Length: 86
Image 1 (cartoon, helix red, strand yellow):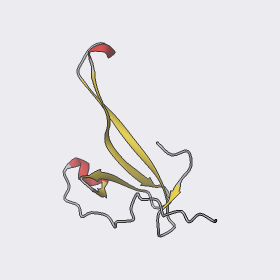
Image 2 (cartoon, helix red, strand yellow):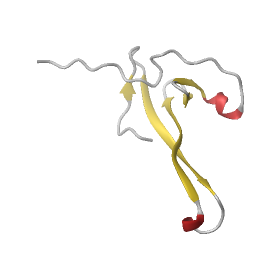
Image 3 (tube, one colour):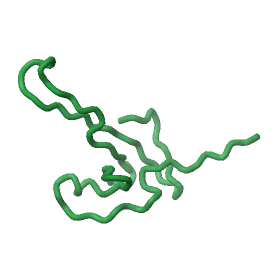
């Protein structure tokens, strides 16, 4: 998990972002090749939904196991713009 506290999208729904590092290779840590943030996405805990980034869009996590999915709404996994008081 990358967020200390949940963020809110433009619909006011809370989500947290994540990144998964992947290790390829066997043996010692030194021999393994790590890919940082190979999979990124977010979780909507109140809805129990997980999304992963594919290209520029976010898709339901079922896409990671080869399921055909449609891109999630554009607000998915994007924090609502903060309006600063001046």
